[in-house]
Image (tube, rainbow, N blue to C red; front, side, top):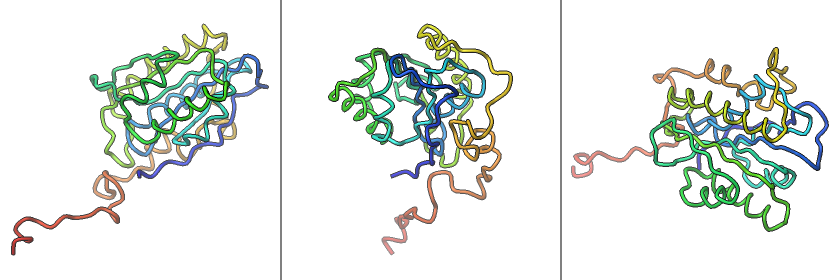
Amino acid sequence: MRPTAPSSDCHPARGTLDPDDRIVVLGIGNVLWADEGFGVRCVEALQQRWSFAPQVQLIDGGTQGLYLIQHVQAARRLLILDAVDYGLAPGTLKLVENDEVPRFLGAKKMSLHQTGFQEVLMLSQLTGHYPEELLLIGCQPEELEDYGGSLRPSVRLALEDALALAVDRLRAWGAAPQPRPAPPDALEAVTLPTLSLAAYEAGRPSAEAACRVGDERFLVTLPRADAAGA
Protein backbone atom coordinates (compact mmCIF):
# COMPACT_ATOMS: atom_id res chain seq x y z
CA MET A 1 0.00 0.00 0.00
CA ARG A 2 1.28 3.46 -0.80
CA PRO A 3 2.17 5.76 2.07
CA THR A 4 -0.45 8.46 2.48
CA ALA A 5 -0.10 12.06 3.42
CA PRO A 6 -1.64 13.11 6.71
CA SER A 7 -4.71 15.19 6.04
CA SER A 8 -6.15 18.13 7.87
CA ASP A 9 -8.75 17.78 10.58
CA CYS A 10 -11.34 18.80 7.98
CA HIS A 11 -11.67 22.34 9.29
CA PRO A 12 -14.86 23.95 7.96
CA ALA A 13 -14.89 27.25 6.16
CA ARG A 14 -15.62 30.26 8.35
CA GLY A 15 -19.16 30.55 9.70
CA THR A 16 -21.85 28.38 11.23
CA LEU A 17 -23.05 25.54 9.03
CA ASP A 18 -26.71 25.37 8.09
CA PRO A 19 -27.68 21.67 8.42
CA ASP A 20 -30.68 22.15 6.12
CA ASP A 21 -28.71 23.45 3.14
CA ARG A 22 -25.13 22.31 3.66
CA ILE A 23 -22.76 22.34 0.69
CA VAL A 24 -19.65 20.20 1.03
CA VAL A 25 -16.65 20.62 -1.27
CA LEU A 26 -14.42 17.59 -0.93
CA GLY A 27 -10.96 17.16 -2.40
CA ILE A 28 -9.66 13.60 -2.24
CA GLY A 29 -6.36 12.04 -3.23
CA ASN A 30 -2.77 11.53 -2.13
CA VAL A 31 -0.51 14.55 -2.55
CA LEU A 32 2.59 12.35 -2.15
CA TRP A 33 2.06 10.72 -5.55
CA ALA A 34 2.23 13.54 -8.11
CA ASP A 35 -1.08 14.03 -9.98
CA GLU A 36 -3.02 11.93 -7.50
CA GLY A 37 -3.06 15.02 -5.29
CA PHE A 38 -5.15 16.99 -7.80
CA GLY A 39 -8.36 17.05 -5.72
CA VAL A 40 -6.62 18.16 -2.54
CA ARG A 41 -4.78 20.91 -4.41
CA CYS A 42 -8.06 22.14 -5.88
CA VAL A 43 -9.68 22.52 -2.46
CA GLU A 44 -6.55 24.22 -1.12
CA ALA A 45 -6.62 26.73 -3.99
CA LEU A 46 -10.36 27.33 -3.63
CA GLN A 47 -9.94 28.31 -0.01
CA GLN A 48 -6.93 30.52 -0.73
CA ARG A 49 -8.75 32.48 -3.43
CA TRP A 50 -12.43 32.43 -2.47
CA SER A 51 -14.73 32.83 0.51
CA PHE A 52 -18.18 31.28 0.63
CA ALA A 53 -21.50 31.45 2.45
CA PRO A 54 -21.57 30.01 5.99
CA GLN A 55 -23.25 26.75 4.92
CA VAL A 56 -20.28 25.81 2.71
CA GLN A 57 -17.68 23.42 4.09
CA LEU A 58 -14.33 22.85 2.35
CA ILE A 59 -12.62 19.57 3.22
CA ASP A 60 -9.19 18.14 2.49
CA GLY A 61 -10.30 14.51 2.46
CA GLY A 62 -6.89 13.07 1.63
CA THR A 63 -7.21 9.29 1.56
CA GLN A 64 -9.42 8.96 4.63
CA GLY A 65 -11.98 6.69 2.95
CA LEU A 66 -14.77 5.65 5.32
CA TYR A 67 -13.90 8.42 7.76
CA LEU A 68 -15.47 10.83 5.27
CA ILE A 69 -18.94 9.30 5.54
CA GLN A 70 -20.15 11.83 8.10
CA HIS A 71 -19.44 14.67 5.68
CA VAL A 72 -21.21 12.96 2.78
CA GLN A 73 -24.23 12.19 4.97
CA ALA A 74 -24.43 15.80 6.15
CA ALA A 75 -24.30 17.32 2.67
CA ARG A 76 -27.35 18.43 0.75
CA ARG A 77 -25.08 19.18 -2.19
CA LEU A 78 -21.67 17.56 -2.64
CA LEU A 79 -18.88 18.64 -4.99
CA ILE A 80 -15.97 16.20 -5.35
CA LEU A 81 -12.61 17.03 -6.92
CA ASP A 82 -10.30 14.14 -7.74
CA ALA A 83 -7.81 12.69 -10.19
CA VAL A 84 -9.68 10.09 -12.25
CA ASP A 85 -8.46 7.73 -14.95
CA TYR A 86 -10.88 8.40 -17.80
CA GLY A 87 -8.50 7.00 -20.41
CA LEU A 88 -8.23 10.46 -21.94
CA ALA A 89 -5.37 12.85 -22.68
CA PRO A 90 -3.52 14.05 -19.54
CA GLY A 91 -5.10 17.13 -18.03
CA THR A 92 -8.55 16.46 -19.54
CA LEU A 93 -11.42 17.38 -17.23
CA LYS A 94 -14.68 15.45 -17.16
CA LEU A 95 -17.80 16.12 -15.11
CA VAL A 96 -19.94 13.28 -13.75
CA GLU A 97 -23.18 13.96 -11.89
CA ASN A 98 -25.59 12.43 -9.40
CA ASP A 99 -26.26 8.68 -9.79
CA GLU A 100 -23.41 8.27 -12.26
CA VAL A 101 -20.74 9.22 -9.68
CA PRO A 102 -20.66 6.03 -7.55
CA ARG A 103 -21.10 3.85 -10.63
CA PHE A 104 -18.25 5.59 -12.39
CA LEU A 105 -15.85 5.38 -9.46
CA GLY A 106 -16.57 1.67 -9.22
CA ALA A 107 -15.98 1.00 -12.91
CA LYS A 108 -12.33 2.00 -13.21
CA LYS A 109 -10.44 2.44 -9.96
CA MET A 110 -7.16 4.29 -10.14
CA SER A 111 -6.11 3.93 -6.52
CA LEU A 112 -7.19 2.59 -3.14
CA HIS A 113 -8.72 5.89 -2.04
CA GLN A 114 -11.29 5.63 -4.84
CA THR A 115 -12.30 2.18 -3.64
CA GLY A 116 -12.83 3.60 -0.16
CA PHE A 117 -14.81 6.57 -1.39
CA GLN A 118 -17.09 4.44 -3.53
CA GLU A 119 -17.95 2.57 -0.33
CA VAL A 120 -18.64 5.87 1.42
CA LEU A 121 -21.19 6.82 -1.23
CA MET A 122 -22.86 3.41 -1.16
CA LEU A 123 -23.11 3.35 2.64
CA SER A 124 -24.52 6.87 2.67
CA GLN A 125 -27.23 5.73 0.27
CA LEU A 126 -28.04 2.75 2.47
CA THR A 127 -28.41 4.94 5.56
CA GLY A 128 -30.81 7.25 3.76
CA HIS A 129 -28.55 10.27 4.25
CA TYR A 130 -27.31 11.11 0.78
CA PRO A 131 -26.82 14.40 -1.10
CA GLU A 132 -29.67 15.65 -3.27
CA GLU A 133 -27.10 16.83 -5.81
CA LEU A 134 -23.67 15.39 -6.48
CA LEU A 135 -20.96 16.54 -8.89
CA LEU A 136 -17.55 14.98 -9.55
CA ILE A 137 -14.97 17.14 -11.33
CA GLY A 138 -12.25 14.69 -12.33
CA CYS A 139 -8.93 15.26 -14.04
CA GLN A 140 -7.03 12.72 -16.12
CA PRO A 141 -3.59 12.36 -14.48
CA GLU A 142 -0.34 12.55 -16.40
CA GLU A 143 1.98 10.92 -13.83
CA LEU A 144 1.32 8.94 -10.66
CA GLU A 145 4.48 6.90 -10.08
CA ASP A 146 6.52 9.77 -8.68
CA TYR A 147 6.77 9.48 -4.91
CA GLY A 148 7.22 12.96 -3.46
CA GLY A 149 6.30 14.48 -6.80
CA SER A 150 3.91 17.31 -7.50
CA LEU A 151 1.35 18.13 -10.18
CA ARG A 152 2.56 17.82 -13.75
CA PRO A 153 2.19 20.86 -16.06
CA SER A 154 -0.90 19.53 -17.86
CA VAL A 155 -2.69 18.80 -14.59
CA ARG A 156 -1.59 22.07 -12.98
CA LEU A 157 -3.08 23.91 -15.96
CA ALA A 158 -6.29 21.88 -15.70
CA LEU A 159 -6.56 22.86 -12.03
CA GLU A 160 -7.32 26.43 -13.09
CA ASP A 161 -10.18 25.28 -15.32
CA ALA A 162 -11.44 22.96 -12.58
CA LEU A 163 -11.58 25.87 -10.13
CA ALA A 164 -13.63 27.90 -12.61
CA LEU A 165 -16.06 25.01 -13.06
CA ALA A 166 -16.30 24.50 -9.31
CA VAL A 167 -16.97 28.17 -8.59
CA ASP A 168 -19.66 28.31 -11.29
CA ARG A 169 -21.46 25.32 -9.83
CA LEU A 170 -21.11 26.56 -6.28
CA ARG A 171 -22.56 29.91 -7.32
CA ALA A 172 -25.52 28.10 -8.90
CA TRP A 173 -25.98 26.19 -5.63
CA GLY A 174 -26.17 29.41 -3.63
CA ALA A 175 -22.67 29.26 -2.13
CA ALA A 176 -22.11 32.99 -2.83
CA PRO A 177 -18.40 32.79 -3.77
CA GLN A 178 -16.44 36.01 -3.29
CA PRO A 179 -12.77 36.60 -4.16
CA ARG A 180 -10.59 36.74 -1.06
CA PRO A 181 -8.40 39.81 -0.55
CA ALA A 182 -5.83 37.51 1.11
CA PRO A 183 -5.47 33.76 1.85
CA PRO A 184 -6.72 32.48 5.22
CA ASP A 185 -4.26 32.16 8.06
CA ALA A 186 -2.67 28.81 8.89
CA LEU A 187 -5.21 27.97 11.60
CA GLU A 188 -8.08 28.19 9.11
CA ALA A 189 -6.35 26.34 6.27
CA VAL A 190 -8.04 23.11 5.17
CA THR A 191 -4.65 21.66 4.18
CA LEU A 192 -1.88 21.42 6.75
CA PRO A 193 0.60 24.26 6.20
CA THR A 194 3.50 21.79 5.95
CA LEU A 195 1.67 20.07 3.06
CA SER A 196 0.57 23.20 1.22
CA LEU A 197 1.60 23.21 -2.41
CA ALA A 198 4.28 25.87 -1.97
CA ALA A 199 5.83 24.27 1.13
CA TYR A 200 5.63 20.79 -0.36
CA GLU A 201 7.40 21.73 -3.57
CA ALA A 202 10.03 23.84 -1.81
CA GLY A 203 10.92 20.97 0.50
CA ARG A 204 11.23 18.28 -2.16
CA PRO A 205 14.78 16.87 -2.52
CA SER A 206 16.41 16.45 -5.91
CA ALA A 207 15.98 13.26 -7.95
CA GLU A 208 19.57 12.33 -7.06
CA ALA A 209 18.84 12.63 -3.33
CA ALA A 210 15.48 10.82 -3.18
CA CYS A 211 13.89 7.78 -4.80
CA ARG A 212 10.95 8.73 -7.03
CA VAL A 213 9.14 5.36 -7.16
CA GLY A 214 8.79 4.60 -3.44
CA ASP A 215 10.93 4.17 -0.36
CA GLU A 216 14.18 2.70 -1.67
CA ARG A 217 14.77 0.93 1.66
CA PHE A 218 11.92 -1.43 0.82
CA LEU A 219 12.35 -1.87 -2.92
CA VAL A 220 13.27 -5.39 -4.03
CA THR A 221 16.16 -5.70 -6.48
CA LEU A 222 15.74 -8.71 -8.73
CA PRO A 223 18.90 -10.65 -9.65
CA ARG A 224 20.23 -10.12 -13.15
CA ALA A 225 19.69 -12.98 -15.62
CA ASP A 226 23.41 -13.58 -16.09
CA ALA A 227 23.98 -13.65 -12.35
CA ALA A 228 21.11 -16.04 -11.81
CA GLY A 229 22.49 -18.43 -14.42
CA ALA A 230 26.02 -18.34 -13.06
